[in-house]
Length: 276
Image (cartoon, rainbow, N blue to C red; front, side):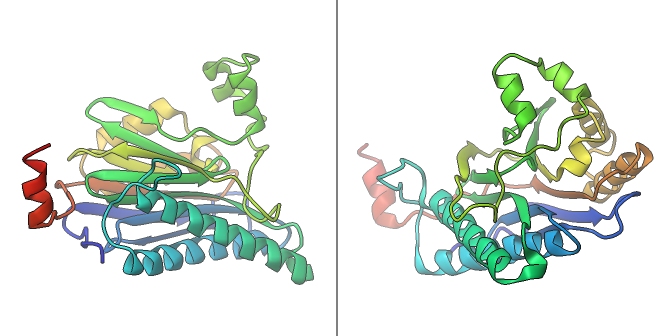
């Protein structure tokens, strides 16, 4: 059983339809007892994108919760070198992909639906991050603001191959061609990583509705201007997105680390550590 992170992490979730779309196909979810944040940006005809993103968030939250109930500790997975929480998060998203894919094949109104996803699971002064597509995680640490995830998009591939500079990519109009999404194929490659967490770190998850309409520098400036007030930061980021055109749904999930949250170590482990 995991230790609740209430009081150690402050959380905010916001989502908005924007100025152009008729309905919101983004979905957000969290469980602060688990330290879990999830954001998905759906795609597909009619309301199918909303169905896909909803399945992605609900399945991920439920599966992570059930898996953490069964498995204790922060042991390293021998096959990957990653902590078990990271593997649990990845496997939950793999399961979500399977459900979305099967639903799209069995329900005519959901044919062709898919979704991006990005998720963070905080544990033992670390965060496991998993993503598919171009929804992002940013981190503000002190004065350094940087993108933690790398988009699974055609534009990012062109940047990686040297056809665009990062600055040119920021100005490009062809940002929305994702190369990876949930529900498109029977299997999916979920990118996973782990990062150390420090008190005062701020993690920002967002759909491309924000990153397409607001430059990273302006996201950073907004966070710095309303430092410490997550509600104001979130509302201002969405307002800024809509002021710039609001061409897409926009969602933001933020986690402000208030205190350390190291896992409790048993007495035997504490004694053993004295001899290492």
